[in-house]
Image (cartoon, rainbow, N blue to C red):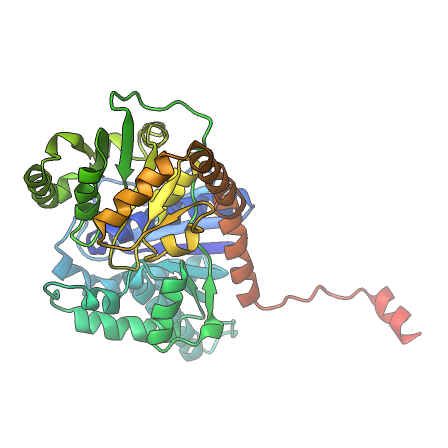
Length: 419
C-alpha cells in the first residue's frame, strides 16, 4: 500500500499538536515495518535541506515548496495552506498514493484541497476515471475545545472552528484518539459511523520496566507529566506536597514555558514547598537523548498527571506505565481511557490537592498495591498501546477504504464453472 501522511507546518502547531506530529513519525515507521510504502509530506521551512530525506526505517520525508522557505508567524501560515494543497496535488499526480492520512486540522485542509484538485482535473481532462483518493483525518486539537477554555480567545478561532466542521464532514474517516475526542467530533455533527477510535502509541523498545533509573537523593520522588499550562493541574500537585513531607516533585518543561514555570515557582515558595519542587529542561529528556526520559521515569515512585480541562494527551502517562511506574491521574481526556481506576492506577478529582495527597499517601503506603499497579500498567501498555498494534489497527482502517481489486479469472476456472 502506498500511504501519504501529511503534517502541518510546524509554525501552526500547538505544543499538543507537536507531540501528535512526533506520533506521526512513529506511526510512519511502524507502517513501513509492515511492508507499506510511506511518504511524509510537509511544508519546507529551511532552504538548505534536500527535497527528500530518507528516514529510518524505510520512510521518505518530502519537503514541499509552499510559501517562503523559512519559519513564519502563526498568522501567516493559514494563507499558505492553499499553496501546500497545490504542492500536494502536484506531488500526487506524479506519485499517486492509495490513501492519505492528515495529522492536525491544517494538514487536513491542505490534503482535502489536493484530493479535490485531482478529482476536478481528472474530470476536466476527460482522461480515464480513477477512484478518489481516500482521506483519513486525525485532529491534534479542536478549536471548539480551545474556545471553551477559560481565558482570552485567540483571533481567528471562530473561522478555524467552521473549517474543522467542514473538514470533519469531508474526510472519509476520522481517527479519534480517545472517547473525549469521539464526543467532540459528535458535537461537531460528525456521523459516528465515520469515526474510528485508535489510541496513541508508545515506543516499547525505549520505554520498558527493565532498565536503569536516574540516581536520586530524596526518599520519595513524584514526577509530573503533561503540558505546562494553567490547565495542567500542576498547582494542585504543588499544593498537595504540603500533605506529603519528604517528597520531592520533578516537572519537565521547556524554554517556551518559562513564564508558567516562574508562576509555579512563586506559588511553591508561597506554600513553603519551593525547595522540594524542581523544574527540568525538556531538551535534556527529548527523543534525541533516547535513554534519558525512561531513566527519569523509572526513578519516580509515582507519576502524576492531573489536568482539570481537556481533552489532553496521555503520552506521558503511557510512557510511565510502560516503565512499570504507578500513575495517578484525573479522568480528563485520553488518560480516562488509558488508566483503569484501581487496576493500573488511580483516578482523583481535579483541583483537589487534599484528595491527591491522600491518594498518593495511600498508594505509597501499600507496597503490594504499588507493585501491582506498576505491573498491570506495563502489561496493559504492551498489549494495547505499542506502535505495532496501533499501526495494525490503522492499516485496517486504510484497507476498508480501498476499492476491491478482483484477480483475473483463469480460462480453466471459467470452463470448470461452466461445466
